Structures are given as C-alpha cells and as structure tokens.
Amino acid sequence: NAQIADLQQKLLDADNGDRAKQRWESVPTILEAKCALKYLLAELVSSKVQESKLQSSLEQSQASCSDMQKMLMEERNHIAELEAEFQNQILVQEQQHQEKVNQSSWK
Image 1 (tube, rainbow, N blue to C red):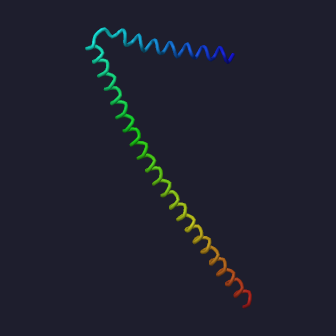
Image 2 (cartoon, rainbow, N blue to C red; image 1 turned 30 degrees about the horizontal axis):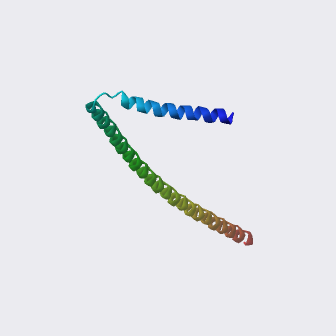
Image 3 (cartoon, one colour; image 1 turned 180 degrees about the vertical axis):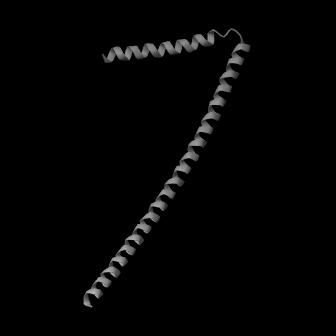
C-alpha cells in the first residue's frame, strides 16, 4: 500500500510537471508568453494587495477586540465596586435597623 501510494504521488508530480511544460510549449510566440507573464504578474500584485488589505483589516479587528476586552474588564470592575458598595449599604441599613429594634426593646 505504501509503495502504491508512493508511485501514485510520483505519477501525480510527473503529470503536474508535464502539464506545466505543456502549457509553456503551447505558447507559440514570445509576444503571447510576454502577455501571459504580464497577466500572471498582475494577478500576483492583485493578490498581494488583497493580502495586505486583509492583514490590515485583521490587525484593526484585533486592536478593536483588545479595546473591547479592556472596556469589558473595566466595566466588570466597576460593577464589582458598585456591588460591594451596595452590599455595604445594606449592611449599614441592617445595623441601623437592628439598633432601632434594640433601642425600642429597652424602652
């Protein structure tokens, strides 16, 4: 099985090499070859520009995500502070209420 797979891969590689050779052999003139190269270079440049734009967009998205995570952490901290303050106020209210109950029971 391994030998068969190896032979199949070698045939595919040879076939791909032959195809590339056939493509260049099918270009009958230098002018057509020049046009083909210009087209390929234009496609390469277009791909590189698109890649650059996508990379920039990715970096902006990552920065935005980082900013949002920072804001989320700040909001969570703020909520935790508010909850602690609220719990403290409840405790103070309960203590004041208990003092009033104790004072009225002494009378």
